[in-house]
Image (cartoon, rainbow, N blue to C red):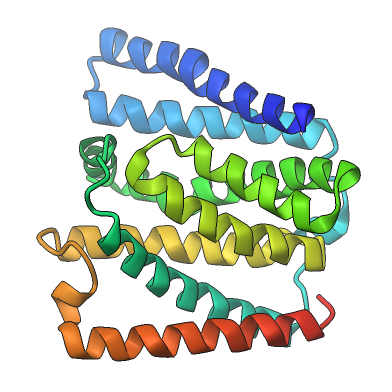
Length: 244
């Protein structure tokens, strides 16, 4: 547990110090906008942390970056889309929680570089960190059930933003379980990219919508929610029976 937490704290430290210094230099010396500086600093922190994880051997195993079976990937996508839809419903029930980073994400998503950072590079790095490193360390010292739970808790708390913590925890359960089943980062990366990409798309395309029900209407929304719950149960059952 200690090593897992230290890895996450290291990433936060890199974001704060290295990213903060770089952002300051970009805005002061180059005269770039604060938004651009934030994106570059975020990308730099991700690259530095990825380098550390690779150097420490957390991504050295070929299986970590090797695709699982086509059938497993298919059910993974079904589980991911279902979980994302359910997360939207949970978010609608917890919309009273403050969203400390709403304006920050809005600024970052305003450029193609920001979208790349949030939708692609961020998810890949976070899977390397939270599944490839953190979950791996936890599995060495705890039962699979405890390791998956602790991994999800750490992932949820890492997001800090109250509006994101619960959904990050719940999604973290699925991502950690998939990693435990396959020891591959690919399923988690696919779901993570899908989740973040859809979030960016809907935020940019429907800025006034709070949930998907505002876009598709209440009746289709609740029918889709029931279908998502059924598909999540079926996909997890199917994945549990398969070899990654």
